[in-house]
Image 1: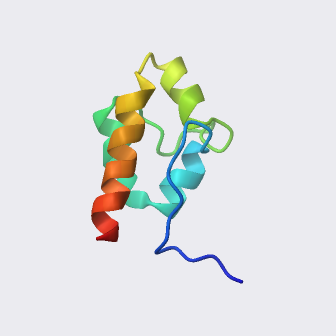
Image 2: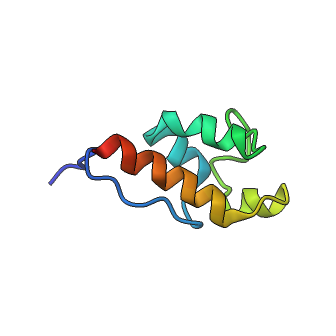
Image 3: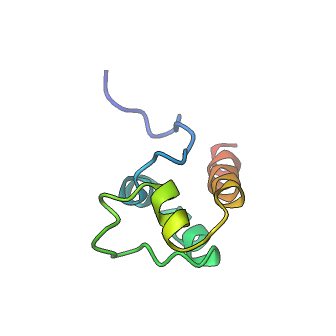
Length: 76
């Protein structure tokens, strides 16, 4: 069975930033809106969303909500 991009798993605090950006490039604007300049960062392949939020003092719940809301809106 191959991966199916149309049925995305929810983005969680444990998701790696780079994986999210590579799978869903449209999320870049959400990261930027939350003051996370993750695109092109050398650490993004290793940092989870929780790591990045903690490092930059960003509240994670609104960030995850916005990321998943974007994916849900695009799935409909």
